Length: 354
Image (cartoon, rainbow, N blue to C red; front, side, top):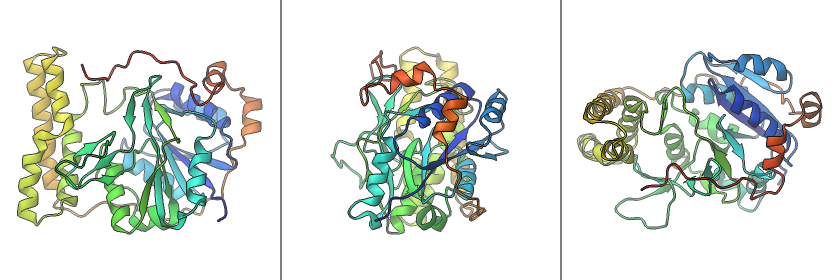
């Protein structure tokens, strides 16, 4: 099978420093050619000034709202590669062969059945996995590092939005991209379900690893101070749209399962470990409840799928040689890729459970 072409889609919002690191890191990828599509949200920092410096090396699309699904859909419409690769603006590929490993999946045996592939995600410069072989069920329960024990649910392999590759025309355009009613959370999980229902296989690629530096932003102020209303809304909407029972039972299960989700336990965990007091706990719980109810109401309306189809943009090769000459790759990035794959030092893991 002929080797596929790649469009790396990066949605960004107020993370200029980390976006610069990512653009530099992509210069060192062994796979060539590929293009980069940057979707710029309503930024307040100096991201626009950074992009002006690199103008001509990538496609640049404006997204007027802080909605990750809308942003990704804009990237899909303006991409020209066979495969769209999604990576977060605060992430880095672990090594130089990250894209090559995805290319091997889509050009290898049985590739015609593979609609998407996803790789593990390491937490910052540690050896702790935020995501590895992650799975979900139709009511939104998730295991981020699946150990093979099915437990009480029927699990399906899912994508992680910060490190995945998906066929553009046959899959993303065919299923309508990402559901834009998801502002944040479950957007890629919902797309995974629709891909599987359309008959496509999702493949886990254990050596296509990215590091996620988990920078605070629009929906996350800290490990505990998140937009719990948005997360609750997305979770309830997801369960009501994808649950495999008739409406009344689906509604009942959505309400019964909601307090058992991992993010509700995270809210309680912060209180139990004295990160915040009872007043803040009550505030977070009320936010989550408000979001859950609004998600159930929202599910009464049709999905809001991708508006566009194909912008017809020409493939814009990411000219790594020219880019590195006009803006040399920093010593920090070179150091990270000097001894792949173990390129990053280990530091204390902030998220490991106590």
